Image (cartoon, rainbow, N blue to C red; front, side, top):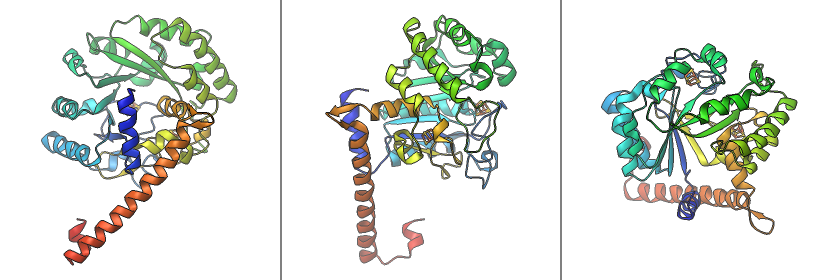
Length: 343
Ligand code: SF4
Ligand code: SF4
């Protein structure tokens, strides 16, 4: 992140706003991956599953997403799903519009659909392709987005590969090395990221990694980052994986990122996983990256995270006061019923 972007992000926080927005632009996905958090019953708080929401298509989806961006004014937006490529034609319309607003965009996909090389023109776009291990394990979990199909669909594009490490692959000797050897030799791959499977509290998924596996994985990744420069996992981020935030209120990523689901009005809390995530077992790449930034010492013992927490508190209080004053002024000038002012 450039210095100007840090200052911009801080100004958003001081204004009581989140610098980052994640939008589940569709509830649909052609895959049925085991351990998928988006389709977990807890994702939207247990009231309704993602597939039970209304979602949008075509020009209506484009218009509503742009209106949301113009209202929230994030510096960074993630377009997720479901799989956002289910709305490929809408993405084609959205991406130039988002780029022209100066917003960094991340599109997360299984690459079941072709990623056009023409998208390489977008300077602020990162397309992230999810790959669940080497071909035998991946193809079993992610059909129809098999290795063969991914390689065909990323041809000439520019992508980041993201792999979530699960218990099933954590103990196989040389597995991560072989994964990196394969993907870093693909000319379309600019970066590789790993997350650790992040469960809900009380979860019993087969994918949950043990404490001993976590320690071994971190040590292995510390060595592999020397061998593969494309592995974009700084030492500070790997250190955070050993001691994740204790709860969502201590997670800078959760506090700087808002997530809205497919009806564009249901907010996913406390973080993108929704439900009751087990922070103590979290291994989310983005959360650990933000935690590393938070522990950066700005001056003596003063960390960026402490400055952020104070700014966030100030910003949210300031915004609440402004909103209260605004309501008071509006009511005094125009004594309209509440439902007209807040339709
Ligand atoms: S591709 Fe993503 S959204 Fe679709 S089932 Fe798999 S993990 Fe879930
Ligand atoms: S991203 Fe991870 S650490 Fe942050 S709130 Fe969610 S589960 Fe907890």
